[in-house]
Image 1 (spheres, chains in turn green, purple):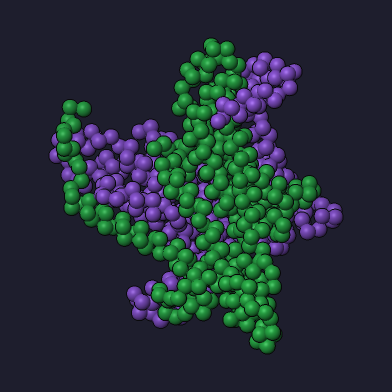
Image 2 (tube, chains in turn red, green):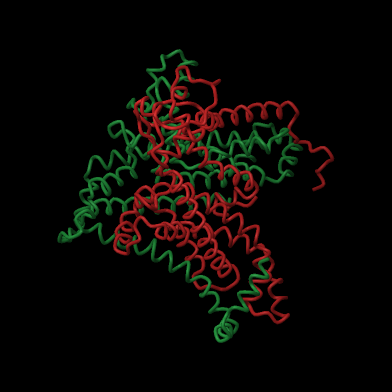
Length: 316
Length: 315
């Protein structure tokens, strides 16, 4: 390394940095526009959302959010006038359009389903994944490479292809359209990622820690609990978020295997309709609420992102 | 915290069981740790796969479970290989995979190469660029339908603003020529960051001293790019192509929500055909055979590709 100087000879010039920066910022701004548009649309009134030319400046309204969470019926102005005073923001907004709130919409239950299924399957996948990853990392497992490849290869299947037999199997077992069925399914899909990622993380924890613990009289299992698990918490957390993001975003299985009680948000949001077509502010509101958790996780995950999306094949 | 949990678990375990666990050999423990995962995958992945193989030889229809199931031998496979529509769907898929990978690799690598300059604020802007790939393709695809609407959509407005074509003529989703591109655009928007991130890791893995040596040898910037940057980043680029290739071959959610395979069947990729055959026409046996063919194709292509990737890595 005798060539290394205080000022690296190949450091990019200030000028090339400026050009690169400009292009990247331009790309970032353009690529974020669709998301900003979703956010803006969620605060528009239905007429504003379909105005031409598209409105960039508009009077913000929470009508989209009201429509997202309620179902409404059209009434005559006389009937609406005969009702008592409006009982809140949403009631008032809806009445202006000659409608009254008939009840809650399905959005909240679907959103709760997404939460239950995503967190449930993440917990199971990370639990099984941690155990397996430790097994593969620390013990001589016969045919370990083949087993690991087998675990990875379960991801090659198009979801629709396994959906047919799973659909039949779930129908026999009474698991179709149940949260439990979806949790099992997403656990199976995610466990491959969990094993591969966690194996990478656990491989990096020196074996000496366990050996030291075992010399102190711990059994293998206690050594695992007391030394490896605490060391692997960062890796486990990162893995959990990746599994969560997958289960949160999954659509194909959810659309084919759930129809009612266990339906998650991704197949539900596109079905939100108003009078005469999709109610875009409500769809945008649902989309915004649905995206917020993922945006938070993305920012938290920046550093581990690469590992997670490449199954740990690339380390940063 | 975990230690305390561990101790609590240990204390709560009944003594005979605890003795058993403590006395367990390493080999036993290994299997105890690995088998639940393997069993789950056998139950939810391998068993359905074998069931699909079995169904692919029959005329079973899932909406008529009480009918007598006849064994057809290889008839389903023969019909698929002779079915014009299936071949068109495969061509559509190939077209879609080719263009998305080409665009995503070109743009993704360029972005990574620029970000690698480490200009001020590069970490922040990189995070912004990464956001689209974290979202649900279905939810985003649904919203892009709104952006693509002629007249009211932002996309057609911008296109007509820039090009002067009246916005009612920018029919991204209903024009036969443009519909495949409407999907390619959204897919590229969403997944270019993915390729960029992997390329960035590749570029960062190139040791500085190689460039310094090249500089001493007076190699031009162009020469350095072709003989150092590109070859050393190639395994990473190939890895990105592999992952995107497998994903886009299976692509369902975004296509289903943007065009649903239409107009006509111009954007009907393999997964959409599969869904139509399996869950609309209920030809379970036939669609199972198609699913198996697809699986074998992905598996085979991925295997050949990984071999090539390993060769590049060893160079």
